[in-house]
View (cartoon, rainbow, N blue to C red):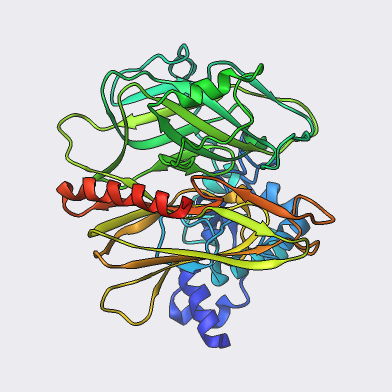
Length: 458
């Protein structure tokens, strides 16, 4: 990038006029002139008191005490964590652009100057002194109902049937599936279908929490599964037959809120339980999980379309020690849909993901989602900035890169061993949260999903 263009971009970001450009390059950014807004948008949701991160970053003083460390993780692209490398525009993008990253690094190098009203055109002296205000505390009476008790619409709060203690260290399983994962039942037993527009997961141990995959279970199979275990919950996955965990959505590390766009909802059938498949990281000491889930529902008069999870998956992974391999699958949409969100799933041996769509009249595909450095700890449901219309006949294709070598830093077994894992719902998959354009085509879409499941198992 030319130096003149870079100066112009920095001038624009900091609020200087073009005439000030000659001096802007030598003026370091300040907390009040733009850094605070960056931190609020990209860091504060985790780096706050009782957040998922191990320390707060709410003020210039917080950054100054960790200036070298923060500079390093910014330069390496490790923070803020954001899996997508490219693809369609997404809501709540946590990753920093090159210009934003350079701005943060320049501020850190300058010693984290706070700035002031007199020297900066943005922010206030009160903001500079106080830093970022923590979110208002939530009301305990609302967040602590008895297990399974429904609250008044338009929201209801569910809790785990019993607390469970995350062990200080991960244990050895008798089976070959992923460790450090547990599935819990949050009872509803709803007498009518629920149309849910948002899910808010609140954990008592956010720093140990990875992704939480949420599903509706009207079959009772999940409750039977957890009742086999002497402790609360179950070490098994929350897949229900051919339906993968996360069919309602996946919430990223530390818990938080997943909200679907206006006009769309996920449905919970009559008499369901909610299954929460919790991925956790042992912290070296016991941590008690007694988590809550708030469901925000639509009123009976609100018009909206249901989202159907279309499962694009590979059912089985076979890898020799040291082998690197590409797995792929595709499907052809039978009806016109609006793609609203995407929920990827893959293990720690996965290193990359590329999801593309080819329209019926197109020669080349468009990239929906690319992840160049996959890390399952940071996966979540990715909501599109605007729903994307995919006509019938569109071919959706996904490729996953796997690395079963010792050079893969996330390989759970070193030296590597032979891998042979599978699941009816997919050893790896992407859930395409889709709404048929024409409501009567929901049934054909559901029939197609079931046929695809049989094809992949066959």
